[in-house]
Length: 317
Ligand SMILES: Nc1ncnc2c1ncn2[C@@H]1O[C@H](COP(=O)(O)OP(=O)(O)OP(=O)(O)O)[C@@H](O)[C@H]1O
View 1 (cartoon, helix red, strand yellow):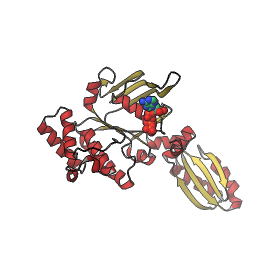
View 2: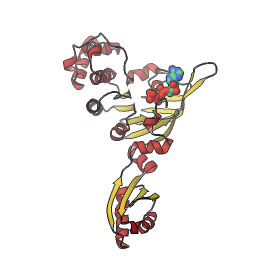
View 3: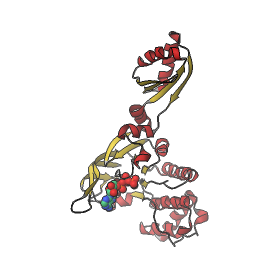
View 4: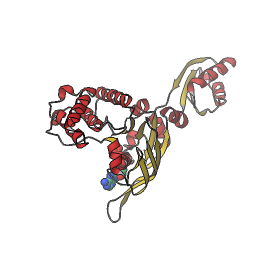
């Protein structure tokens, strides 16, 4: 559905300054995938999306989207994709229903078809009761649902969402996600989105692409990234006189790293916590080391990001 090779975009800001916003990104997205692109502010996420949606041209490299080249066949690309950008700024005096209808006409639907499509989307995104409201009067969550509806008017097979839930409260975020996932299911859509919410990427996306300084620094499922880059942490407590024996046993666990004792707690980094913990407990029992408590801490994408970049995503943002 998407294939980029060494996609690059520079911005010449002045005679002496060029910003290398995107530095040679190669990425493939299969039909039906839901891919989250993560990264701190300024990482190059929006610039990448803007190239894929033909809003700006690449400085170098290639990209095909929905089977067409973004540079030489931009109108073919545009017909097949939906793009929901970051907030749409100034208030609108148009009414919600008219706005959707107008968008359908812009996309070449005749008036009747545009009316029907607007009606379907008003229902699908629970905007029906707001159809007569002015766009400028909508709340943040309602406005975002309208943005998504606008991106879906021409029933695209590929939808790009740039930070769809930024600024929404948790309830509105969850509600917007319900709508996006349902639309995806009903229309077998491929979705590429950017987000700052790591938990959102973790639970919603099948694949996470981490971008930093204009480059892809990781690309995998969230669980694989967590297992590979962060791993689980085991935390066991024992009586102080057994701590050194438990440390020796922990160090023998396959793949054990960062075996650290703090007070009466021993912390061990392992790839697969739920598998390693029973193994360690069995070894401890065999050696007569009584375990007082044991826990597996699963890593978050925050840990992954920290591991990859040495920075916390929120700090970096
Ligand atoms: N039109 C432009 N002119 C000059 N520099 C730009 C332009 N657009 C983006 N940049 C720069 O390119 C870099 C990447 O910006 P981009 O908006 O792609 O980042 P981002 O990862 O989407 O960040 P955010 O999370 O804040 O949206 C930044 O340094 C930004 O200042």
